[in-house]
Length: 234
Image (cartoon, rainbow, N blue to C red; front, side, top):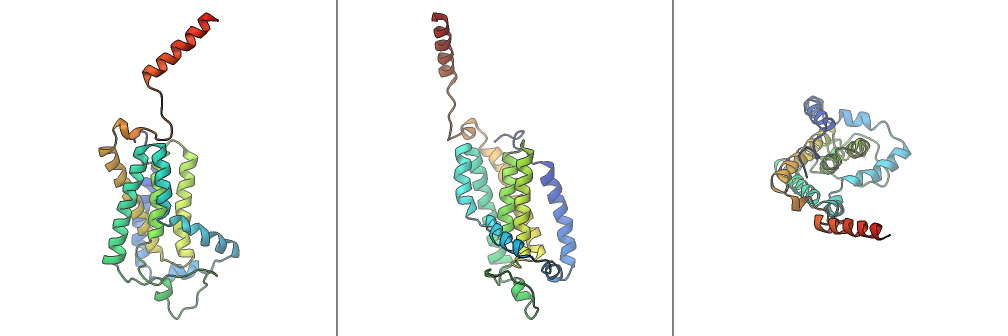
């Protein structure tokens, strides 16, 4: 990775700076109000879409993404591996320690009738923050850094992450505050991972591709000499 080539784009910065005040505002609204309002807007097509799209926030996604990125460039794989580890640590501390047992919508809204997507198994506890959202937004932020120069890909990655985050509320698996903080956790861990990768894994050996190796300068020179000799003899 290179600091100039793999930068944090403006869209990410704006998103993070927006998430902080939005999270504070949402925390002032009685929990469940926004979720029940969102729950009114359901459609069979959206039910089907979000039921499967939400799986893109599963942590297992890192298991196949990291090897693929490692083949492209060793430092990319290291970068995403650090990001995954940081996210896992932070989410585990929150869910299993600081905020263990926080009820999810189905528990918190007991006695209130709301729409449930058919075929979905709703979880009951450890709501804060959303792990799926942290994973999706963390991966999106990481890929946006890796493919910094490709505007279309960056927008696609960001949209993918945002849709996963919204799916958690649409499916009534989380509250809005869960996905807002989950987004901050995912993106922040990715930013920290970027700094650690640039500091400790920025040497040339880590920037090599394991999928395709470039010929050495000596080998390239010999090939050019052979081509020149063939043309001269012809």
